[in-house]
Image (cartoon, rainbow, N blue to C red; front, side, top):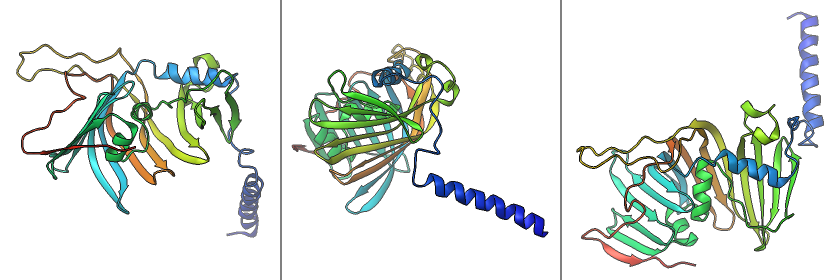
Length: 303
């Protein structure tokens, strides 16, 4: 390599090192600037987030789940159906397609069928019960929102939400009426970056909820992909009529990678969608279960 070329490469490396050195103390200083048309208030940002997902009444699909259990990581497959605000169904399946467990919650009653241990747990559809068995440290209504890409918003008084541009993203900071605080980081979608703020769709990057100085949970959302409406459910025997989607036509982005961690409960779960669709057809009783023969019924009580 010639001395002139070496000097040129050395100059580029020196300039890069200098840029890193200048940016490191000021994390937000070298981040992407805000869009030309910015949200004027936190309420405007929250409103656009809700408008982005207004067409979605729920989600269904197939995911890979990775979580901590008894000090070791456990991985498996899962089929899921959600319906706003807080109805959920999760079927954990083996690599051979055999159902290992089924968790349902209709907003009132919770049930879990544990096939391998021949146990059937029942109880109220509390945050504690769903988190205990699903190992996701968030209440059902928050999980339904996060899986679809929307941040659950804590109840707060007017003026208790603030907006800033922080380290290359909008930061919505909320003081709840119940003593908790929340931070939501979001960005306009790349396709809408140069549109007026009132027309921008948004991606939620992170949600963090803290109470009394303890982080209840933090959710990181990534790998967004456009997701469309589920097809009607057809009776394979051709006897019953088709079950239509549970909402309107919907084509909005969903995060394919959701990582939820909790300082309070020491839980850590990663959910990666392999396939997903909006507004799934909902058959009668999909969010409820009855105990099958040969299992022991147990009451799930936790606080």
